[in-house]
View 1: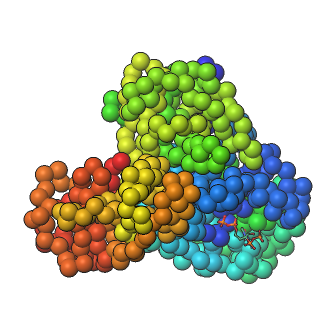
View 2: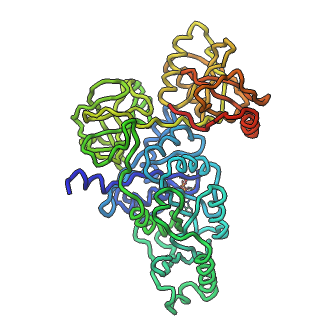
Length: 529
Ligand code: G4P
């Protein structure tokens, strides 16, 4: 096997999704710990330090007023080279978060056992489904009182519309949490909440039919477990690797990231059940990741990495071949040969310059303002473009104008550049003759970021008027006469800067009404950039 194939085969690139506070950061830290990437020195305090290190990248951005990021961490474990794409939650939530999922080959969904499926998970999950990537569920915080296990699974199936297959099964929760039962090996792993956060947790393994199990978990819980297993074997979906690969069946694991229980088992199963970097679609067909020619696409652009220079970093996902720092590449959309300057990677907590990277890896390169989201970079003679990255539906809209009318040019330049980075989407009124710009964002914080950045970087003060719309739909029909669409009273017709028509709605039911009233109309929640 060539070195290239070996390198690519050992790569796994996945995103972690969750609702804030479900335990994503904690789980990520534990993964890094197994990879030996960070040393938590066996103390709870160490965890805070580690967290600080991991999120440093974000902190820097926050200080600068751009608090949207998805960091990428690389570490090695058991012969694998793992790239974790972190997706920020809370108000930091933005289109970036969605786009990060475009760069991943699979996703890990962390769910708080006492809360079940929450809003943010639902949103991100939709993107995973659209991409048909494998989704693994880690039900976290079993050391706290949890919802009924069957109900939790039911919740995932109903809320997210995906079948689930528990790989292990919890024995109690909260103070009564005794461990998990592995359905494959038919063994129980007992839980001991002693060495919080350290790698050397104490876990005991014992066969389900071993009489000594009673001593470990007690007769009541043993009986409950046996009953539940029986019920489960009869009711749950069979494990089917093909369905997992297509994102139709989610393997479910139970554990407690904080106490480091079930994390390594999860990681091991996950690595076995996922594949090396997946082929990607281009305008010239499928691109094989093992092809020796380098190719990548830009999925994120981060401005102001260094405020003094106002530089931008373009993050790209390598889709095939090998990247070499000195190599000449071709930027397809810019129709230009170039070298990628200052390529860097985030290894656990530090940023470093990379010499070599492979399909599956994410690199950040200095961007003098030439890249747009979705751009393709290739090294071979074959100049193809990867499929565009969808534009995700903003949920908040505002009419924006510059205070000083003389500054129209700067205003348009600033707002267009920020839109090019993908932080906001901009639209215009349809047929009203008004020049006003309507800004759409996925997370409200982006409005503040926009205001701050226009002021700071472009010296333009703006006024914003919030609009009541919450739902946007791209019109998929090629030849539609927008004037003829009869909508509801809360509907507004707008266009994007390329002149493509869109509809805004206040209520979600109006979307359905409009579809009913206009036969053949095709509306989509995702646009193409
Ligand atoms: P997030 O990235 O998904 O937002 O969640 P994060 O890991 O920051 O975890 C949120 C809170 O939940 C943290 O507590 C964390 O310690 C706790 N937590 C994570 N996993 C588990 C678990 O398995 N069991 C229990 N009991 N708690 C867990 P915090 O008090 O907000 O932060 P900290 O003061 O501990 O840092």
